[in-house]
Length: 257
Image (cartoon, rainbow, N blue to C red; front, top):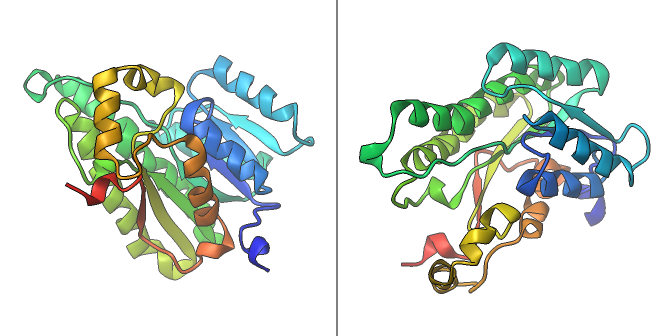
């Protein structure tokens, strides 16, 4: 009985920004739970490489790829419609795609502020809204927004990222306020510092690595595998009465001083 609660067999899931890194790991976790996956990315070559990698170990029809600009309203509409028409009813959406831009706030160009906000926050609104249109017609669906420990905390030089991730928490709440009564569950996860290819340079920085280990009660970096279980849970029947929550997966970093 318990295992069936987390079974995603037959469900179609889209993970934005899933050609590499955390998004790719989350897509793999959803596949392992039974989902049919739609991979997504801006780099078509890397996206096709990821699709081929997944296809090598999955039956035909279990993996698809969609490349569209998540910051462009029409492209998002066309992309979600393509999934609905060619893959099937989208039941799980993971808004994962995002970028970072590190510069002191006094030196921050407005164009760079806008680019981060558009990619990390507005895109979740656009993709979530289009997926939500279809989910609401069916009276069910799961939307999972990938937030960050910076949803609650701040560090110097990443002001637009901090603002975007804080906004994503309240976008999660706004979606819940409007859509929960019609059968949707919208939640988020907030990863702490995760050891990936993209953070390897931070892990290799002795001073920064020591700070992370000392600042985190669990005394280690997170792994992409640490994120998979919570996303599978939030995408499954097991979370049917969970709504508007952001689950921090940070080894305790956000609860200590």
